[in-house]
Length: 348
Image (cartoon, rainbow, N blue to C red; front, side, top):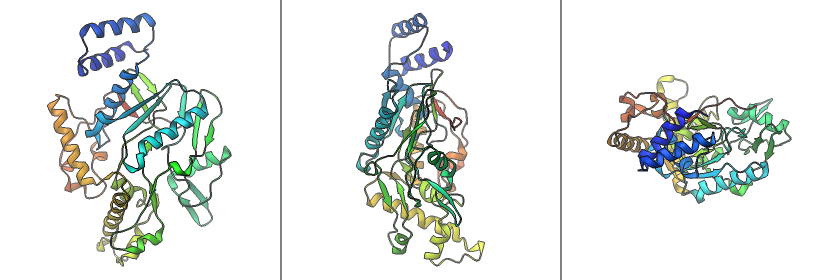
């Protein structure tokens, strides 16, 4: 128990939620008397929201106060944890009207092995990798536990859950719980022939949520996608789905010369397709220009609240046309405050 961290967090909670000085004194006395700090659901909710506000790499922090927090610290059965994770997927998906959500499990006892709750498998074959290269190692882990996929480019991986030192268990996510968007272009119908798709909700499950000196290793959370995450990274990166050459071929771009900027032109068309597809299907998504404008509003709100703005410039700038946003032209202080979300070593 880190009393200094607990005092700092509770003082922040007391100040921002307009609690009395006597409340703070009583709460600290209670913690010292019990010899352990067990956050209330209200304190946990505040901590998770402030952690989003403090997330240096996130451009979507304007909406930090809207985060829905599920307190699942009392669930220690693998099947029940799986059901709670499915509930998270269903609640967050909300038939396409994505709701920012976090589900917090018992600190030091529960781990979700997945990088994201929904993620596509990657298979090494004689003809090359089928699916998502990023998932190859974890796909092998899932197979070693007994899971078998269909071998397509878009197989949804199972959830792998571990409690304490018990053996990890895998659970297949029901197909009806995973909303996916077929990627098509508003002007070029041949894009549909590529049979591309992506899942609607990015639910990060590999990071630890830290507040008041407590590490919650299982605390999957989500916002909604910025289009470039899919169109300029997941489907475009050379070491991911690497679709730019095929997009360029469909649009008849000259790929024999670097100076033709065929990659840039293909990248724009792919991003247009992603945004068009999500919007046509009624699934929440934001383009990088709108996201940058929203981040500017966040900057102004933080300044008005008297808080120093922190940010990781290399993550805040979008991967497509970053110089067209104000973020590209500003310095940010990359100092990490807590509560926050941090990387952690995978359990496998």
